[in-house]
Image 1 (cartoon, each protein chain N blue to C red):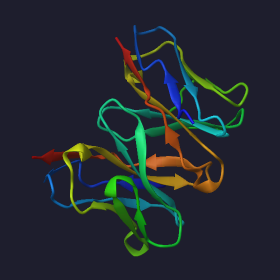
Image 2: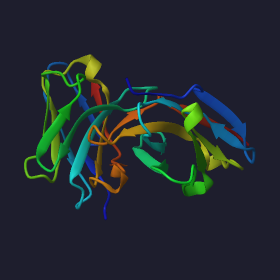
Image 3: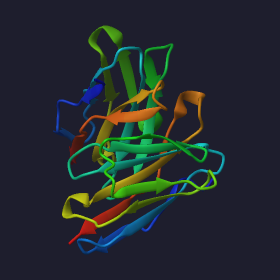
Length: 114
Length: 114
């Protein structure tokens, strides 16, 4: 069990550029979640997948954001035309449906938009 | 709407002293409740969880929490704080009827004085 892995750990980009983050969940976990955390705040839910199906998206997830989990394993989160307000820590978590749905988090990707 | 409140943004305690971090939630049913800890620049580590049964739950690193339904609270306690406990602590509600997504409080930053 290698835990939840996120790549990259840090991303610096210029406003207007597109960025993509990757999350590799714990191998047997069928649920995968994305959260966003800004400075001094708790994480906020963005979206989640059960296997390859994206079952819920938060209103926080504007049209510029898209997430995929094509084979029910790893997931990507893409932000198009980044804005300074997108600067945050993006956290990925995975869980097994049932068993209390305990979520295990990765170390996160910190995005800075200049 | 579901919400989690952590009234204390920042707490400072002396090493060896006892600790209590407060958490209140708003949810229409008995929730799944969690405490996570986050060190600077890191992801979240699960300290403990409550699903049902005994309202006093034990976690890792000597932490415990007590669920009080009448007060909608789930306070975290530790009898003797160590310097390594300095971190950000988050209380969360798991919405089991909404894919298990977590609603977090804004966090309590713990500082430990020598």
